[in-house]
Every structure is written in structure tokens, then in C-alpha cells.
Image 1 (cartoon, helix red, strand yellow):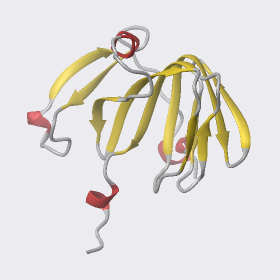
Image 2 (cartoon, one colour):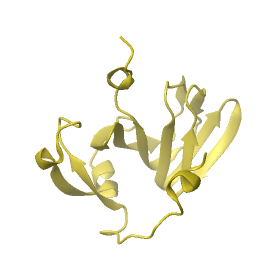
Image 3 (cartoon, helix red, strand yellow):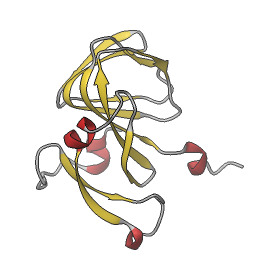
Image 4 (tube, one colour):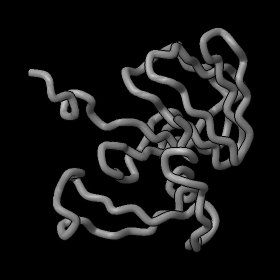
Amino acid sequence: MSLASAYGPPRPHPSPGPASFTVRSTNRPRSPPSLFAVTTINVNDTAAALQQEWNSLVLGHVGPACIKVLRMNELPLEEESHDAPEALLVLEGRLELDVAGAAVPVEAGGLHVIPAGTPHAVRPGSHGTLVIVELDDLDELDPRP
């Protein structure tokens, strides 16, 4: 089932500015809404201020999803896979992915969702700002003992 069929077509909404969005952020992501602080974050400025490439910073949480930002620096990263899907949004620059053995370039403004359990790696040449959306902690969400 696609997102469009599950939630209907996308609806336009006002944006606070380029590469900015508002998140409800707290150290306790599952707190009642009254404990959340509403913050607008300029994602590009936040990424530019990061001291080290490929070291992500958590911007906030939406339900069980964690939103992170990082800077890419042309160097590759080893193959990995996750127990849940992962969304990769390139704000600026270009992400060079290898997904299950296939080259997948993602340009600025592009979003690529990697299915759960799919091996993927970053190929050389990736640069710019990347936003990652992933589940924060699957162990907390798993109802099994």
C-alpha cells in the first residue's frame, strides 16, 4: 500500500522557509504533547555547524520516528541493513547509494526509502546535507517479551 492510498494525496501546507521545518522536540519522545517544546530548525544551518561528517544529529521525533541530519563528505560508508525502513532525503548535494547491489543516485530534493532488511551502502562521491528518518528504538515498539 502506498502512502497516497493510505493517507490520500499530499496536501500543500505553508513552509517556514527553505530547508526549515517545525518539530516537536524533547529528550523524552513519547511524552504527552503538553511537555513538548515547539522549535523551528534551519536544517542546512544545523548541518553546516556539525563538527564531523557522517556524524548525525537528532533534530526531533515524530511518534516512533527519529529525524536526523548529517553532512556527507565524498567518502564511502560500509554496507548495513536495518530492521525497519529508512527514509533518506537529500537537501543539498548528491547521495550515491548502493542498494542491494544496484547503484542508486539521489539528487538534491530526492527522497529514497530503503525497505527493512535491505542491504545498502554509501558509495564514494556523496556530498551535501542528508536527512534520515528512521524508527528510534524497535525494542521499545515490539510488544513481544
